[in-house]
Length: 238
Image (cartoon, rainbow, N blue to C red; front, side, top):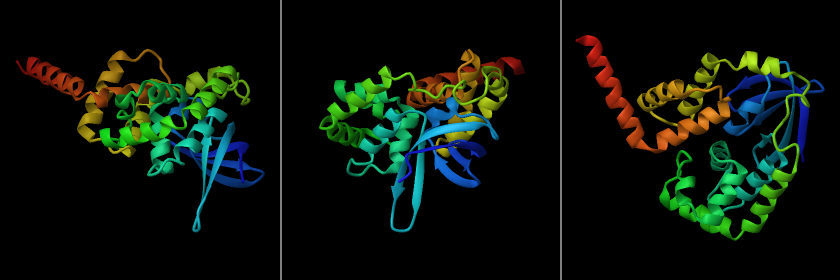
């Protein structure tokens, strides 16, 4: 069983990584929320890992905190929730937000996750309720830990490199790809990205994805922006 990996990133495509450890490349899938803490190719990276073993395959899922890994473990033990759904949940919600949603029975928070409707959200919250003590403990440990998020200093590269690589153009490109992979329509993605650009204040890619998912969950915001865009286009014509 593999519990962690420390090595050099050789391939990085959204939430799919290949990490070279002693000459062996390990394929790892990570939540989109981890992207802001994942270094560039040829940089050193450390991840906590959950190993999913099946009869015909072995898959590795990576996380920037032990709390995320434990939350993933709790989620995939819920009936009907596989690794894909668990990764989608942790791509959209932090461990703290998930714990809060369970405690306050906030179904709408889980509905922010692409592919999860009201009925599925209710089912997940119901089953998580019986595991709320474990989830709260996971969240508490995350808050108490100084390593709840991967530190760029600890990973062996400086903040200047992070800032240099995280310009808006690259972030928007990654944002579009992430939303496309999650199954959103091209039209909605385009309108959402336009809004993200207008309100951009230097957020990292994981925050941009979270903001985009919030916008996409509120169709009225998308429709309003669409109407404003049409109005602007008409103004330019006349």
